Length: 314
Ligand SMILES: O=C(O)[C@H](CCc1ccccc1)CC1(C(=O)N[C@@H](Cc2c[nH]c3ccccc23)C(=O)O)CCCC1
Ligand SMILES: [Ca+2]
Ligand SMILES: [Zn+2]
Image (cartoon, rainbow, N blue to C red; front, side):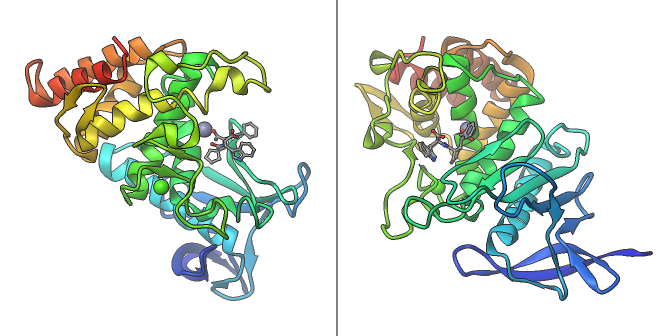
């Protein structure tokens, strides 16, 4: 037919070559993957902040737009994770098209889920390089879409911090580096080893790891909606302990591994959390989900309780 799906290639933001599922249309190739769910399409907004989007195209099967290459390749990886792990067909579970917009604004040091698609800045080359270059960031942004179509946690205060933490949990597990850092691949390209956040030790970047240090910030843009990117450290720390194990604040947690830990989070997110769930609700949801999956007195369920005890969520 007119639109044949084909295999393209391109260098990503970090200079690595990856293969892409693309569509050939006449003599042009498009970043349109018709092999996954309702399709994955990658656009550019050409350094504007509004106006028309154009599907990234190439006159050959080689794409030379690293930010778009990674946005496209990593969206496919995140789709595959949700499909292969939980049989979830795309962001809404019903095969909705996955759309990413690259080259948003100029020197834009951020990325976001805008309620319909993922949007990535190119960074200023100092604080950030193009943000789609990090699989944990792409996983984070697409998980905001999944959260919106499931619990739809309100983006403020504890429900917002939970929204943030769940996005970090999936981003980190999907990336699979087990570095427990967020954004390290695109943050400060001139400096290695640093990141936006640490789930293993949130205090590395000034975020709380325990309820005693919960930061009561105003529910305004200036207060980051009650500190959603800060207080996420507390549930993030609980997830780190649940997966990796460890002793924190005198509480010992036996690790159960990423696979079982994220399965409990997914079940809690899709069956038990609601838009106004707070951290205590998250503990209850995780305990119920683990009970469903492994049993009330299973070691996994004991680890869930210990992980939340360790960070002071009861
Ligand atoms: O998805 C999110 O939670 C973040 C979306 C932030 C946003 C929200 C609304 C409009 C515009 C931007 C984006 C990410 C984030 O955590 N941003 C943080 C940290 C950050 C990135 N760039 C910054 C520049 C200045 C200050 C903070 C930041 C934030 O916006 O707080 C997630 C993974 C990496 C970037
Ligand atoms: Ca990471
Ligand atoms: Zn987020």
